[in-house]
Image (cartoon, rainbow, N blue to C red; front, side, top):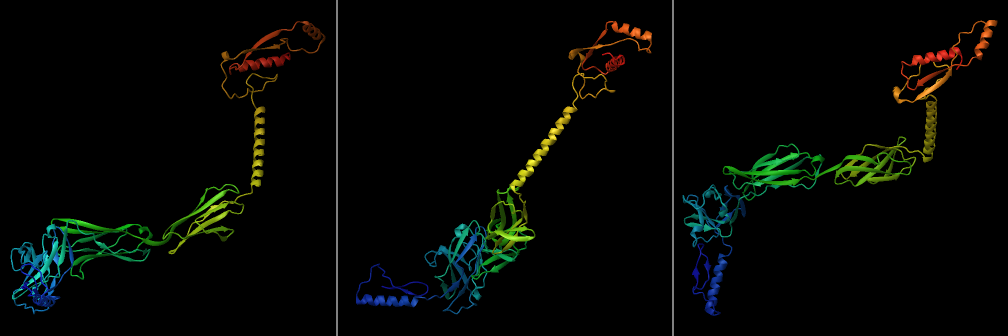
Amino acid sequence: MIKLLGATGCWRGDMLDGSTYRASPENMFQIGLFMSGVLACFGQRNLITTMPERLDVLSGSCVQIPCSFHTPKYIFNSTINTSGVWIKETSKFGQNPDNVIFNSSKTVNSYQGNITGNLSQKNCTTVFFNVTTSYTNKYYFRIESEPYNATDNEKYVQIKVQDSPEQPDMTVLRDIKEGTPVSLNCSAVAPCPEHPPKLTWTLPTRSTPVNKLQENSDGTKSVLSTVTFIPSYLHNDRNITCTAVYPVGTGSKTAEHTWTLHVLFSPKNTSASISPAVPGSVGSCVNLTCSSTANPPVTNYTWFRISGGKTTQVASRRTYTLNVTVGDGGQYYCEARNDQGVEKSQEVKLPGQRNPEVWWIVGGTLVLVLLLIVIVFFGWRRKSKIPNGLERTVNPPETAPAREKPAEPVENLPEEIHYGEIDFSRQRPKKTQAAAQDRERDLGKESEYSEVKVTRGRSQDQEPLVNELYAQVNKTGAL
């Protein structure tokens, strides 16, 4: 037997006892009748709805389902009271009435919500409040307007409820040129347009973003934020972050998207250096190194030498190594180049070098001059050196020599005894005969000696006594 099922009036062949058809003329007739009913129902939709395929919803917030419908085989009468019904999981709600979670004709429903669209204008947009993770499911829409009742069995919206928001979408530009203005976009879904997210930027430069709430092609809402700035080479490899803050109840939930800037720029901070800083003599090895920052990296380094007012290219590499010769002195600089431009470094000086034979001659001459000065100096010092002991001539100097060191105590010095012959006779009288006789008589007498003890390191108090003694010796003329 064949029974009639479904609210749309489509025939579906089935055996009530569960048995299979037999290949008989009567059964073949029944099969043909069944197939004609299937073909009649194939592709037939009394209600066609338009809604997003999926909505990502934040737990504790609300969700708005953009919805519209069309009745191809029924002239919708807006004067008749019409209600919208939402069914979860399956469109066959006859056997599962609990699957009906919302009916606009009822005041009490499983889900708190409201159809914000005008059903008479075929707008079935609906908002559900205080969604929880248990709301994750697929949902079908149904129209009930007597005598017309229909459900779109082929179209549904998948709602996914999660505790954390999805990260915002950011426009990613692969290559940004230095000095060229660039605009970056960041967007975040707004499943609850009544409480859209707030977007903020973290940028390496100052800029004022522009935010607006916009409608997408599927009817959903999102917040778009645009920021414009002029990139610099200093912004290369710096992070940009777009942050979306969703209000939820009395608090908020945050999601962010971070992207690293990739700025193309010509060589910067190009410099030249010499190692060692003070080159050695002729024949020594010297390295000249060129350094620069660029994106993309430097592809060509070139070295130039300035000598005698003339500039000459000497090498095409980052490090220029040379064995110093007599004529290598001068100013050197390098240039760094990539496909964005070129930059020149400051000049560095490589001192001129002399022939080693010249250095030997100059060095030998200096050594001989220094040696001669030393010999003359020590000779002069030897002649002008004052002896430590008492060394006097018969005629002592008028003044005692200056002493460089204080005199040692008398008790610490050895005693020395000096003997002198002193004639204490009176001053010779005029040459007379009597005087001559007296002189002959005195010469015959035995000489008298006086012992004079002189101690080294005499004090200043003893100096007049010694001088007087010498004076007496000189006066008598007999030492």
